[in-house]
Image (tube, rainbow, N blue to C red; front, side, top):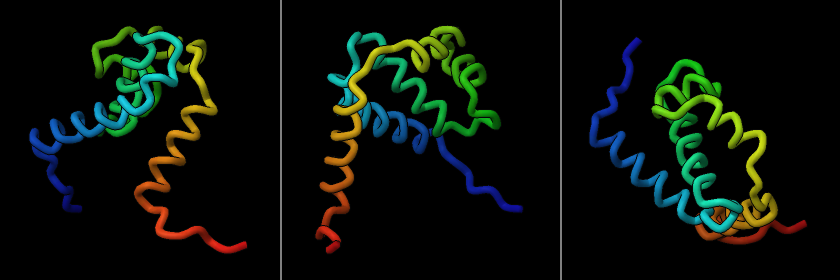
Length: 101
């Protein structure tokens, strides 16, 4: 089975794009450090790690696993604002017309 190779430039570009994407959600988090964990989590989810659970993602990013666990379980963030922001992004990119009901 042939695997498509990912270059260092591809990874760097993905990191830049994720950082730009994450900035759109800065105001969704109550505390600024929480926003950094959001980006770490997204990078882990889009990585080539075999297991996408908290511990491998945190260790890969050089973050204590407990920190990422607390981000997912205890952090306060505005769910409604985040959902609205995602909807705005999707509509801006793919909203050519609204389907009729």
